[in-house]
Length: 534
Ligand SMILES: [Cu+2]
Image (cartoon, rainbow, N blue to C red; front, side, top):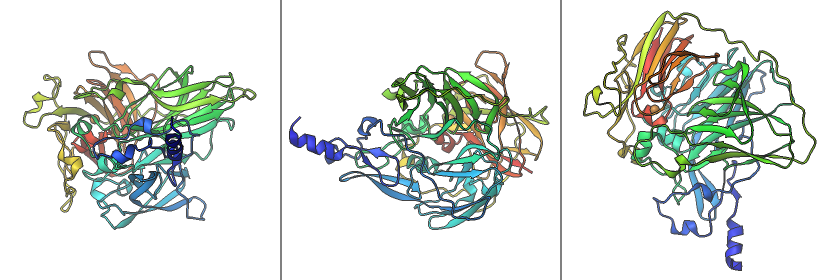
């Protein structure tokens, strides 16, 4: 390497983005040939920097039991290197900020919308009153603000998250980086103090060589977008140094729009201790774990007693029914976190309480519903479902119609993101989401059982607002029903192609609650519906 090139390389290498953990470096001169269509690849970000904690949203209240703050989504340009900036939309200028509260706390957040489009704050995984849910019919216009106020009731402890949920604007806002983590601590923690906890928010970004978020492609809309830059807490493949034998508690959020994470930790078994809605009753050992968009997981792992070793937490290839040309990264192992053991004494194993929690079965349902997920070409009837089962019937026989009243349903002006939307509809019970459409009506406090059928050739992660559910039984394509071996509180669950799940849930608060595919692009193309609970 010539001396001049060497100097230039070291000047550009590894510059931290201000106010965030996102570290990007550009190879010498690559941005001088910037083309708006060429993309920054994962290799353009340095790996192996120390894992950074999520940046915190400060609590402005001095009252015990109250979390008060301001969230301002706005455009921010974060310096990447001389002449190259990542142009993102962020809350308070922070990449994946964290709000931390305790069960019983009251939250009071002022949202100040400094975007050039309407937005909302959806508190994914928190059973809030319906008016605080950030639903698309409660949009905050550009330049306007509103309060979100609610209390974290007992039992809401867990790792949740927040993201925008405006009508026909969610995919674009999420692709620009708008999301954050919401950690609700229990009143009384049950895990031993020796356990070392880390929150890991996995996200991805697609930037062009000018540092701009690249618009959605037709493939993004069809499959759910997977950005080339795979990030953990805004960093590429960060490094975590621990003493040998350390018991790590890794709490992950899959904040990607479309990317599935099939998690394995090299040479280690994972122990599942919690899901979307908090701790499960007894630890479950796992070789690997599938974490789909919107899901969270709480894992314990006792790291090897060997010193000076490295272990990769990685996402392994998972086939989720890709439509069109498959990007190469789908067949590759993607490293997320590199764990290194230090040359120090060995930490002893920790003893866990038994049980970790108690999960009451919801009991026999009062109402049963059928929910069917399909993909269809709009010029055909539903028997033209994309690779769908032509003999399958459609649910929705108990559907009702309602309205959110006049003034709702206005969509954004079209932009590049939406111009390339494919001619495929993603449907629930044969219907694409409409703001004034109510698919189901239910009653507060009644046990509901939903049989959700993925009548399509792609995986879909199914999310319900306003409550958590228990997966009671599952039936894979061409198999018999199997009872779930243990109970967990979930708000997002994956359905493989032609899989059926029986979910039980109770809505404790009245209002119009959304349920949808959490591949954001599928949601926006119509795979979303409303249940009106009164
Ligand atoms: Cu989907």
